[in-house]
Image (cartoon, rainbow, N blue to C red):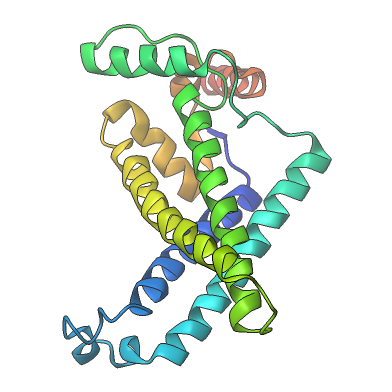
Length: 223
């Protein structure tokens, strides 16, 4: 039996942010003299067009800002902060990873695993840095505002650093689904659902999920 884990709204925001970041990485990379140097233009002709890729970069940036702003405002208004890190997350993340490696018993988890909450705040901070530094660069490039060279320089450096960090975080995020224990969480970002037995076994501190899982199991037994 399956229970609801991610609403369609959460999934739309998740994939909206993911696709926006992917588009920003690609178009941002094409801003460098890479496409022509490595003959990418032979496969993707527009990759060597600086103005075209720059405009695409701005479009993806607007989408990222929209999805990020909507996510923060909506969940703040709804008081939904279960993805925010907790004091014990570092210790419990170690215990969960250790248990997966040694096949031992994991500490009980809420809706989100402790390492998921830590990954969330890391990605959120990097995205915030990319947005702020990107806006500073855009003000200089589009609006031709009088920004000091030092401010623009550091905004550009931090923006480039943010791109490297977000790529590394995405790789780490994807690698987290290699362990069999985490694969249920990957499928839930497509279907929105996760197994009832899995929830009872691994997310026993998630009250709403546990209640729904018990009802699903009881209904299954009655049928």
